[in-house]
Image (cartoon, rainbow, N blue to C red; front, side, top):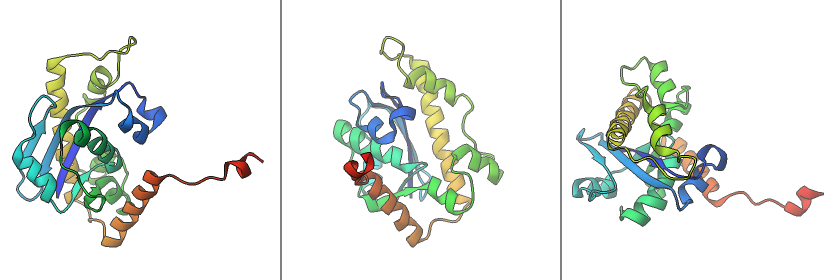
Amino acid sequence: MLILDFETRSRCNLLVKGSYAYANDPTTDILCMAAWDQETERKWLWYPDEDLPESLRYRLKEAEFVAAHNAEFDKGIYEQVAVKRYGFPEIELSRWYCTSAQCRVNGLPASLDHAAWALGLQQRKMAKGKHLIKLLSIPKPDGTFREDENALIEMGEYCMQDVITTAAVAAATRVMTAQEHQDWLKTVEMNNRGVMVDTYMAEL
């Protein structure tokens, strides 16, 4: 399993608009991406001004599963930004895997940090993450973004720590059964497609 995490920035308000509108917004971009291969324990930290390492490209194409915590968000960023703007290889839906869903089927909190805490794990999210997100991911009042090289380096460290924590949580809990994974995939498909609503009837 290859575990990845994106840190992003956008003028789109994620909390108001939701992950699908956020991923498709033209101002949304990637700040960095961290990845960890569970099989080899190899780690990558990628920034958009760099070429995608061929070793990472290979694992993205060949790994049985590509996992993320709250994977629908990372899947959206991957498909709408990483693939379309930076030439990442496409990943079939069936190979996506959500460690947050894995936590839920194990009776644990869906939040990564809360799950790590509930499991008593040493690996946790970096406390400075919220500050970095406010600094780099959210635009200034004039709509421009802060450019801070030192903060971006710290953001990369935060991103990598999220991947390491995700790997620790995944290793400490039961993986989803094939049926549980299929149920999650069906939910993703429904979210992608949307729900048909009889607006005429709803307005009566």
